[in-house]
Amino acid sequence: MSSITTIAFDFGGVLVQRISDEFICHMAYAAGTDPKRFVPAFWQFRNDYDSGALDARTYWRTVMSEAGSDSSGLTGTHEETVDLLMHLDALGWASIHPGMLRWISALRHAGYRRMIISNMAAETYDLLIRNSALLHYFERVVLSGWIGINKPDRRIFEAAAAEMEVEPEEMLFIDDLPHNVDGARAAGLHAVQFNDPESFAEELQARYPEIPGTGLFCSGPAIMQGSAPWQKIE
Image (cartoon, rainbow, N blue to C red; front, top):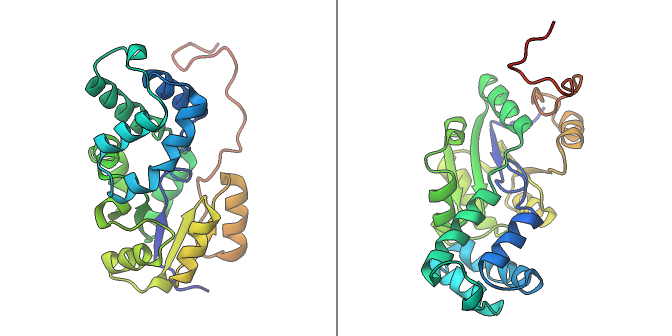
C-alpha cells in the first residue's frame, strides 16, 4: 500500500476539458486573422505567458502580430479586442469534467488532501478560478505564472510538495500530458496520465486500489430523450 496523502491535479485537460478548436477559431476571427495563422501563434508563446515571462496584454499583442492581425477585421479597438481574447481564452478552459469534481468530493470525504498544479498565467487564474466554486474543493494552488516555473520542470513539483508540507512520495499527480507525468515522477511524486475518466479509473484501481474511485464516470442509463427535468412524467 502506498503512503499517498495528497492528490494533485493539472487543470486544463484533467479538471476541465482542453480548449476546443471552435473557441480558438472564434478567437482568430476576433483577432482579425486566419485560424491557420492564429493557432501556431497562440501556442508558440503560451509557455512564456503561462510562466509569467509575458503579461497578458503583451502575450495577446504578440500573438496578434505574429498571426498577421488586420485591424480592419476587428469589431472594436485593439485594446477591446485584447480584452475579448482574454475572456474567450479563459472561458475556453471552463468546461469542467463533472466526474472529476465528484471524485474530488469523495477524496475529501476519505481524508485525502487536494491541490492544483497548473501551467497557467496569473491573469487566467484571476478570470477563471479566483472567485469560482471550484476552489472550495482544494487546499492549495500552485501556478507556473506565480512562481515562474512551468511543468515539467521538477522545481514546480518540489514547490507544490513544500506548499503542502509533505514529502514528494506522499503525492499523486494527475496530468493529461505524458512529459508532465514524467516530470512529476522525476521529482519523486507518484503520477498517472489522464486520458478519459473510464481508463483513468481502471489504472487508478490497478495501481492504487486503496484510493477510492467513486464518481469518476457515469454508467447509469441515459437521460430520457425529449424529457426536461421540469416536465411532469406520467
